[in-house]
Length: 320
Length: 212
Image (cartoon, rainbow over all chains, first blue to last red; front, side, top):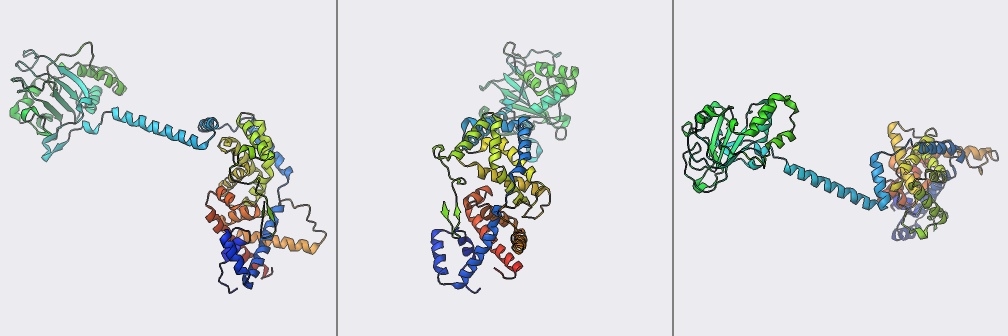
C-alpha cells in the first residue's frame, strides 16, 4: 500500500472514534483512494472477528457459587472494614460527596499540623539552650530564650553575711532570677551532677543602676556561667553581658581569674561551682535523684519542680 | 444510541459515564441506586441482587483479562467484596457498572502481578447456542482456526494496548469509559486503541497469509 494517509486515522475511523472534522477529512480521502478503502475494509473484517468475542460469556450457573460465597462472607461479617474505612464511610455517607469528605480530611490534617506546630512552639528549644562560643572559643554568645528554661531561684533581698553560708560579705545584692538550661537540669536531676554544657543565667530584675560591692559588683544586667572542662580551668567559665549604660551585649568574653568569680564559686558553692544550697529547686531535684531510680523521673516531674510556687516564693541571694 | 460505521448500534444509556439526575435514571438504574442505598443503610441482603445483576459481566471480563478460567471466580469474589467494602465511595449519580469494571481491572492487575500471567486471552468460555458446528464441520474448523489466530494476535499486543482493545472493542465501552476505568486520558486511550487495531490487523494478516 503506497498511500501516505495516516493509517492510525483509518484505525480510529473504523469504529467512529474520530472527531467530526477528521472524520470528514478521512471520508473525503477514502472517496478518492482505493488503497485506503481496501485497507479500511480489511480493518472492518478484523474488527468484526474481534467483536465476535462479545457473544462468548460466562454461564450464569458458574456465578452461583461465587455469589453465595460473597454473601456468606458478608453475612458472617468476615469482611468487616477497618477503622479507617469506617471513618471514611461515616464521613462520606453523612456528606454524600467525596469532594466534601476529602475537604474534611484536609481540614483535619491542617488542624493536626497546627496543633503539632503549637506543641513544638511551647517546647523549649534545645538548640537555643546550648552555649555557643565564638572568636577563638572564649567568647560566649548571649543565650537566647533563657526565660523559657528552668527557673531555679529568685533573689529579692540582700543576702546575710556569714562565713558559714559562704557568701560574700556585701550589702545590697541586685535582685534577679537564675535559670538553668533544660538539658543541664535533667542530667542534674538524674545524677546529682552538672553535665558538660550546663548553662546558667543570672538575669537582673532591676534595670536601674545600683552601686554595690557584692559578689556581682556594680549592678550587672546579665551574667552566665558555662560548664566546659575543655575550655575553662576548674571546669566553669563566667561571663558578664552588661554593656554600656546597662545595655546587654550580644557576646561576652570569659571573665579573668582576677574577677574573683571562679574563686568565690569554687570556694563557697555547695555543688560544683553552683550555689545549690540557695535553690530549693535544685535541692529537691538532687534529693529525688538520690531516692528514685535515675530513669523514672519524667520530664513532666522535672518541669513541675521547676515552676516557682506562688505561695512560697524563694527569697534568696542571687548567685549562680 | 449511536449508529456506527460498521452498521452496528451502540447503546449508551446503561453505560453512560455522564452525570444524570436521579429523576432521569432508567427504572433499572433507579433500582440499583435503591439497592445501593439499602446496602449502605445496613441491609447487606440488598447487595445480593446487585451481584446477580453484574456477576456475569464481571466474570466474563475477568476471564478475558486474566486469560484463565481458574481464577475467574476468585476475581469476581474479590471484586464484589471490594465493592461492598467501598460502596460508600460510589457516586450514585454515575452508573455502577463502569465502577465495577474498574475494580475488576484492578483486581486482575493485582493477581497478574502476583503470578506470571498466562497470556491466554481466550478461554473456554461457554459457546453461544447459535453456533452449531455440526451443521458445517468445515466452517466450524475454520472458525476455531480464526479464533486461535485472533488469540495469538491479541496476546502479541503490548499490555496497555491489549487492555484498551479488550475494553473498547470487545466489551464495547466508549473511549471516555475506557479512559475512566484505566485512569488515563481519552487521547491516550485513542492512541492505544489505534495502534492496537493496526498491530492486531498486521498480526492476523501475517497468520492468515494475506487472506481477508
